[in-house]
Image (cartoon, rainbow, N blue to C red; front, side, top):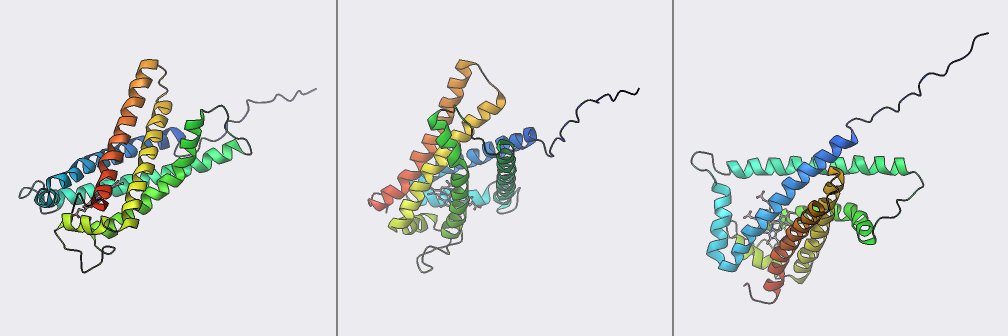
Length: 235
Ligand code: HEM
C-alpha cells in the first residue's frame, strides 16, 4: 500500500519589490522631501527681511557653485532629485496601499489609537493634495501662469509672492495646505518609527518629538507668510 505523504506547504511567492524595500524607499524619499521643504521654509523666511534679501536669495539659488558649476546647475540637479524622489515615493505608497487592501480583505485594522487612525486615513488624500499644491505652486511662483501675467515679473520673486498671496483664495489654499503637509509629515515620521521596530520608550519619545517639531516649524514658518500678506504686514 502506498501512503501519500504531503510535502511541505508551498510558500506564497514574495511580491517584488518586497514590502521591506518599498518601505525603505518611502522613508528615504520622504526624508529627502522633508529636508527640502524645511530648507525651503528657512529660505522663505528671508521675506521678513525685505524684497532685496528675498530676491537675492532666489537669485543665489540659481547661481550656487557658479562659475565652477554652470548657471542653474545645482538647481537642476536638485530638481531631478526631487522629481525622482516624488515619483518613487508616490509609486511605493500606491503599491503598498493596494497590497494592504488585498491582504486585509474585508477586515479593518483595530486597536489603533484614534489620532493615529485619523492620521493614517489622511495620508492618501493629503499626499494627493501635496502633489496638486506643488503643481499650482510652480505654475504660480516659478512659471507665473497663475499670477496675472501683467503682475508677474521674472526675477522679482518678492513682488510675485506678494501679488499671489494678496488673493484671499490663494492665501487660504497655501495656509490650509501647510496644515495637511504638517499632518502628513507627522504621521509619516511616526510610521518610520514603526517600520524601524524601535521599542525603547525614550527613543520613541525623542523621535516623535523631533517629528512634531519639524512639522510645526514648517507649518508656522510657511503658513505665516500668506497670512501676513493678507494683513498687509508684508507688502
Ligand atoms: C508659504 C509657503 C511657500 C512659499 C512662500 C514658497 C515660495 C517659493 C518661491 C518664491 C519659489 C520660486 C522661486 C523662483 O523661481 O524665483 C518657490 C519654488 C518652489 N517651491 Fe515653494 N514656497 C512655499 C512652500 C513650498 C512647499 C510646502 C513646497 C513643497 C511641498 C514647495 C516647493 C517648491 C518647489 C519644488 C519650487 C521650485 C524650485 C525650482 O525648481 O525652481 N514650496 N517657492
